[in-house]
Image (cartoon, rainbow, N blue to C red; front, side, top):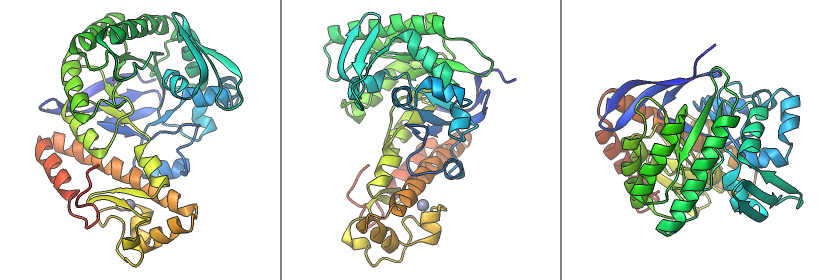
Length: 378
Ligand SMILES: [Zn+2]
């Protein structure tokens, strides 16, 4: 059996290249984790997701606890078997989506009661129940239940919210059943206030976790404030544990996050954009619905080796989206996931060669070269 852990392989400034060891296989970091909300990365087979280079995916506790239910997933052999993903799976705690999707929710010191957005059934999520659900799912990396502090928040609001999350983090640690190769990650909160972020880091490291996530960002504070918050958070986290920036982000956010010492990311952006006709490419962001692609025989991204780019033209992708054919979202999701994976691989190689800064500059310059992408920043 493998002991869960993260080893540093190389560093370039604050950026790190490493290797994550889990019960379900090793993962090179920095890493982007595609989001498999309801036990599926939307529009993709598991083999297709693997073919993009992804080695770890994310599942959403909130969605899975409502449908099909954690107990049913457990009876069917766990999430890995259920969705044909033998590799590592990280699950969120359910808290974020309870607050964004759940109806008639009431938060108290012990947990949150809410009604399903699907049929109005009442549920209760506590630190203990969130950990139990993630155990039933057989999640490789379990996240603590926390309150994602809304933005903006006053210092006092952010402080009491963060302190609630720290009390829940201790309860999650106590409820978590240790298994070799499995991990529980704590989540740093504190909005954009450096003193609260530092306090949160101290509280979590005192409890002790296998990894540390930075939560409560990408909620409307903007990229500059997010980067500043990273700069005043990361130095207070242990050197020898993986760091995970939750729900981030654009390709430019990934460049900035890695440069500031983050190892793990997840975001719905590449998959959601792919379903709506937007392509992230080495030459800029494209909207395949735009008429400028109607007669263009060129690939979406000449630098990409995905099926959309090696077998099809921009004109074909444009046609599929104009006709609402389901192959359009499939091909463009595939492409976007491949682009995100190649960006992460490029950053890892650049860290190994200690040239991350020039890699980031070249990548950002590349985004300005497409005729449509010229004036569009991610
Ligand atoms: Zn492609």
